[in-house]
Image (cartoon, rainbow, N blue to C red; front, side):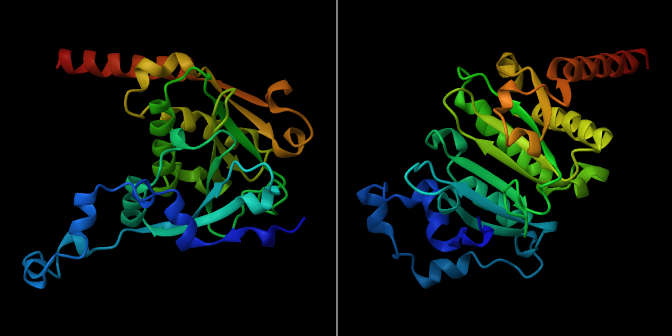
Length: 267
């Protein structure tokens, strides 16, 4: 199986996952297209020293892939590279327009990987690694999936995983009827200390997602599993190599907040 057959069609496939690309504008909107005159455009000239002209380069370049739900196609032909990012501002603008995972069909995936690393188990950067994966209950509200995925992508592209950034290959969001999944792929499944730290930080990142408190009942833990083992069996039947409970992390946070509040009161 050749990895080089992955479809790489930035311009065409990018449009397929954008909210405003499917021709659903009103007639009024369509009539306005192209009618802004030159004088009005000049009024909004951006100064040379404006922050709007500044770039916010990422430390790593990232590739976003989309996996179609079409089971009549081979897996590699279903996988398309949508866009490559190297600027945080550009990435945020894209996220603002892209379809959230909750509106994708079952069997679809989003994959965000460091540039040059394909989202394949057999890829050289992935083959010795594994994934820290969180599974949402199938009854979970779609809003929380979208918020969690966005929060995780922002943390990864902003290098919020500190000394563990180099151990991370990418992240995946699987849309499944039995329960959607969000995971971080790491390079070395044997490095248990690093993988456990990444799993814990993944939980902490997700707990930052907007509205997370009311949805916490829909997910219990992040489990770490090796790619080599998971590729041979259903991941649901595997004993996790590492297990991090969300409740434990949340309780630690709560204790810290209470201590900080008490400290402020005493002063």
